[in-house]
Image 1 (cartoon, rainbow, N blue to C red):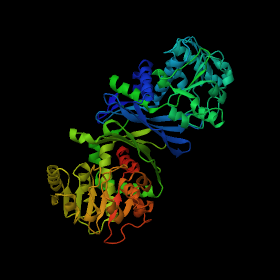
Image 2: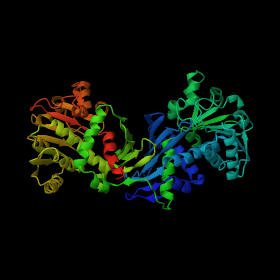
Image 3: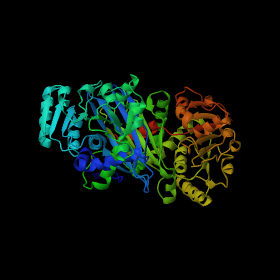
Image 4: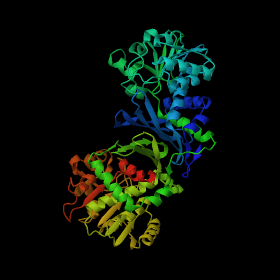
Length: 640
């Protein structure tokens, strides 16, 4: 374990291997599976970005919730690259956050964690479902997971014989020798799957097979089968006969109904329905559902893997492994971001990113929001830059942290190299977000505000108010700034600080109306749940940046301002889904989707009009998008 300057505990592959044995991983994963099936976990279905050429970026967020003490939350981010020989290389990170503070606390090598926790999960299922006297294991597959499963299953059953099959006979013989040397258990290689599984009480399929390699009529009564290799709806390792003949237990019902290839093929053939999924393994472990019902019954455990298993393994590492080791993963903390990412650098970067987004030269998924306990949220934003890196921003939103003297938004941006699929590094997400959000508003202001605009009103006095003043001062020659906030003493202190820093007259206003009445540029940067700015207060010709609300629900401006403005979005698709001010006006029947006239990137590219007259009120709705984060973070990880 290495501690980065940011305070993150970093476990590279070697550190994970050294610290996370099956004696620790199996009980950690067992508890995670119980938590999942008993309502103490929230997780989203895994999402994917296709990178072309058989390459995929997968994002898997989850959270432990509902306990007396706040649990961990986080996500696994992993690239899956086809090596051209039927195998897939996995690279990535498990990112763990503290549930009490919202702070990211641990990074762990995702490939190593996945290898260990996948085998541990099969061991948990085997312990629950295989006959107590099961002593012969058949491995269908000879890759990394085959060896991991051998070691894990030997922890829960006293194995006397191991039977192995792989497509390459010479490699299968070598693998059998490796297993016997590692375990001391009699291990024999076989030239067919049918011969390998004959007489086996436990079978594990751990292959990259696209179509079934294991038939139901080869499986003896009383056998337990772990189906592990296929992780998507198009792949299947076992045939429909085995699915139909078995008591079919899954790691997570919702995921298997969408991604469980073997089950979906049998369902599509009309052989069975959703009720054939007898239970989740967590429900069996919690005694909420029966597992094996007779000695003759065939049981199947379908493993897709889920993020709570990864988080449980990472949490064990964070809490128990205390042997520092250096990590080569580059990490840029908040201080370094603030020192190196100035507005004169960030504004052009964000301008280019917004243009590229509107020209279809980037990829991003709609932001995922995972609700946590106590009104907290976990945001997950994956994306990819054309010809550049891909990755995701993970951010914890804890509004009550402000009263504790802690940041309300904390997170990381993880970037991956497009050529290799390996993580390039990790950058503090809070500081990048603060700077790039203001830089994006400055870009919009430069494009939409009148050239002679010189008075700025800030509604809010938090971090974004400060960064917006700094950024907008780069694109307009400001003569005065007016600040309003709910707490007059805080607003006054902020105004004094801002005036001293920028060398400008900064005054406070007693109301939001007073602040904006003669402002050329208005920025709403608050956590308001209901509108604080009315359209009737905004002067003709003003430009308004609406920044504070980033999800559907909370709204900073009223219907009147939305209706009377030329409404420009940072990303049209996202605003149509999550732009609260727009959605409220639409729900009231006052406007339709066409009211979002353009994306700011289209205006910058000359593909859409911005301001159409000196008297027009323009409104830029900022939700923020991950291509801004990736573009801003990328230079911080480039080698000089």
